[in-house]
Length: 279
Length: 248
Image 1 (tube, each protein chain N blue to C red):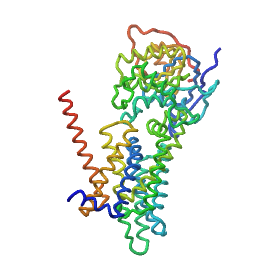
Image 2: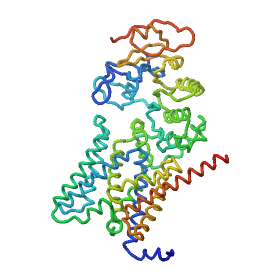
Image 3: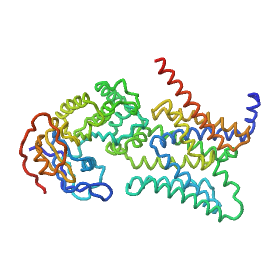
Image 4: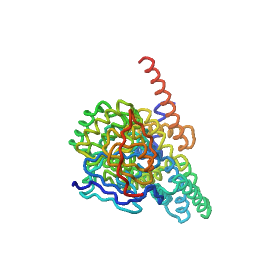
């Protein structure tokens, strides 16, 4: 297959939309994922992701927009977890596990109660980047810009409250406000990315590019652009592969992100060994 | 008589609803240098977190007769997540944050202040280094700079001797002595041997607090007042009778 043959696919609008969604999701997940990975709260992300399925089910049952339902459930879960972790007398990991499975259970019950067949359900579990519409793109673009703005303007308090909340509090930074704000951003970023790769796979675009970036730098501000770059290369490669090999796009993207991480890790390790031997 | 900087009036505090400390009273005066000693789990860190306003008081009061002093704080090394992607410069700069007007970018005056402090303390070349790549001494120095950069009136240090070598310990000793000319210091340690030559007075914390207005403690005193700390001394232990405690 020649390059021009490979690119004929760009004539299709649905594929251009899918590429734009992959790009935007990668940039959004790069910012929010760096926060998640640095704070070691991937498990909280998992809780938000799965609890939001309850919202999708409820929205289905009531005939509303499923992403709206997911957003409401996601935000409530994120705020709930942040509140619980601030209280300190409830085991946070257990609380997350409860919300995680409760959300999934509610989702299944509501979908079951909805009359008729739910054809789009699979697309929420596994993503459907090839059916992303203009409205989805505008929402994703708008929210990515907002997040970029917040990360630029409030970079220091976001970093300091994530790193050492007690010291930040002593310095007069409103730690609670920033933590709750980041919880909401986390929930919305996850829910909007569900469209791209689905509930089951969404956490990987918030973690794998960051882990790849952290092979090169341990500087929060530098991890973000590097993670965006690795996110874009992995998801674009995954998208092309999905189309030409006729495999599900979400799974293909995750597969390519992981292969990319392994290859980069191997190269970096070999390079360091060579350096050590010659140095 | 000088006005106290801070007064702990019969406080009871702890985590959740479980009081770790009871009936704690203490007056701290400007330019005091108090060593807070006691066994692990006795409530030393709880005490300073209450002073810092990080823990609720179940009863009692904390007064600041001249207003809340500007406070620098060095947390215990174990409380710091060394794998967090943050650089030396960023850590030190965080000490300059205030609750006043928020600016998205650090002013050039503040940047200059951070640079100067790093140069003076020998951290200049490590400025962009992530904290995960520092030695124990460099890490403690970084966090001490964070505590000091805003020129506090009260400096609170929680076990600054953890994971550091003898050389840094000596350096720290000289540094604190110099700083004490201008600021009040509370120094927490489980090891009285290393801190007693530095501090002026000692507060022994084990569920409650006993204050010894001297830096000399004999074994008998520690036993009588139920302060189960390891007494490490080089040469004969100076023996001195302290006045009895108000409480008990």
